[in-house]
Length: 165
Image (cartoon, rainbow, N blue to C red; front, side):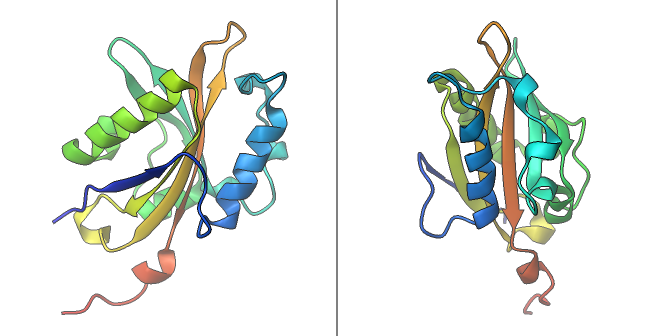
């Protein structure tokens, strides 16, 4: 059975992975005048060393609300078991899990807030593997939130351990 629980926080915890903290630090460095960063300011060359493979970029789709993975680093593919670039939430996550992700990411867009999350991978064969993540809003020139930049860290070491019978 797939664990659909996602723990959400408004700030990082003591156990938050350093790569997520560094990605968040990069996002904060792009904030100007109390405003969230413009998507045009995000550059791959600015992402801290050792973090880029954990980064994903989501396009915000409206009417109806959805998200499409514009890009996803290699760690996301390794942790989820598939390449997700170009796919929407419904194509990546099972229905119950996807509904929770849609609600949480929509909140990040509507409230213009950073969300920190953790849980277990959403696929039956990988559901024993924990993940941590963060999503942060990016705006267009007119101020509308049009993308989320995020990071995901999967505990791959657990995935390499044989399952107990």
